[in-house]
Image 1 (cartoon, one colour):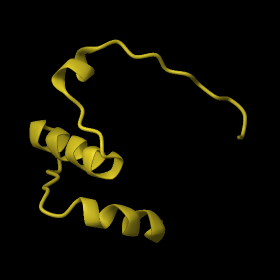
Image 2 (image 1 turned 60 degrees about the vertical axis):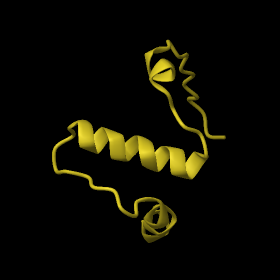
Image 3 (image 1 turned 120 degrees about the vertical axis):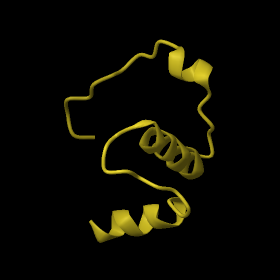
Image 4 (image 1 turned 180 degrees about the vertical axis):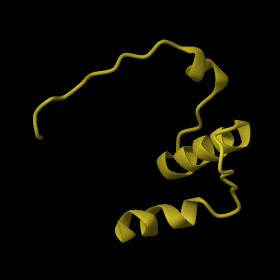
Length: 59
C-alpha cells in the first residue's frame, strides 16, 4: 500500500478531502485524476453516456 500512496502523494498537494463525500471531495478527486492522467474531464464528458466493459479473467 505504501507504493500506491507514494505514487499519489505528489498529485494531492494543496487539495482537501473532507470526511464526507461532498462537492469539495469530488472536485479534489477529479483534480487528482486530471493531474495523474493529464486529461481534464469536462462537464460535457461527465454528462455523456459511457460504456463499461467487465473483464472477468486475470489479464
